[in-house]
Image (cartoon, rainbow, N blue to C red; front, side, top):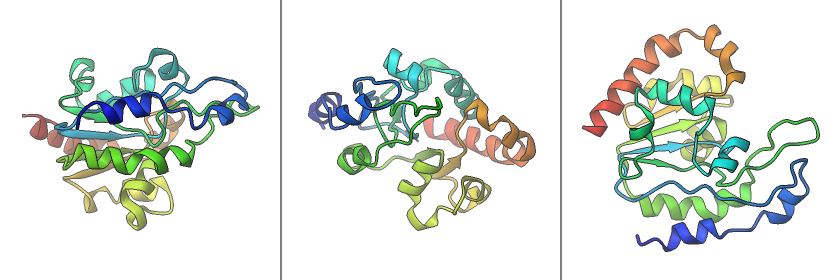
Amino acid sequence: MDDTLVREIRACRLCAARFGETATAHAPRPVVWFRPGARILIAGQAPGRRVHDSGRPFDDPSGDRLREWLGIGRDLFYDRKRIAIVPMAFCFPGYDDRGSDLPPPVQCSETWHARVMAALGRIPLRVLVGGYAHRWHLGRQAGGRVSETVRNWRAFAPGLFPLPHPSWRNTAWLRKNPWFAEDLLPQLRARVAEVLQ
């Protein structure tokens, strides 16, 4: 793949009118972070406001928690030759009138996702962060709820690990589900280390 696809995504303005009508009234800013040859795919939801401002995926406390889960530092996490970060929407979707995150626009994944996956080719490890990524990458194998899919992680490992979103909003979920840190995370970290050798 040359850089044509990356340039096309960065120039995308399909959702400009939609974003202009949100409480944030922002312009699109696709955050594109992938290259063929990556060993790990981080499939997320959509950039948040901080990522929209910085232009760097997971450049926020959620990213700090995700890197802890993976057992890697920032330098390795942002090495595009090793890790591709492909959210279900490349732009920050904005907030609603109550200040809550809007969902990733389906138009983004419908327009770009299949092309990006084809360009990336076979990737030994896919880490699916949150329900939107679970549903796209797992299809019918995704459970009805994020908890159900994550609890069933052994059915997908070692090539794929479904995770909850690493947002602070999920701190209570993490406390109620100690098996996530005790059982899943050690296996995920071992697989990350193995794939990146």
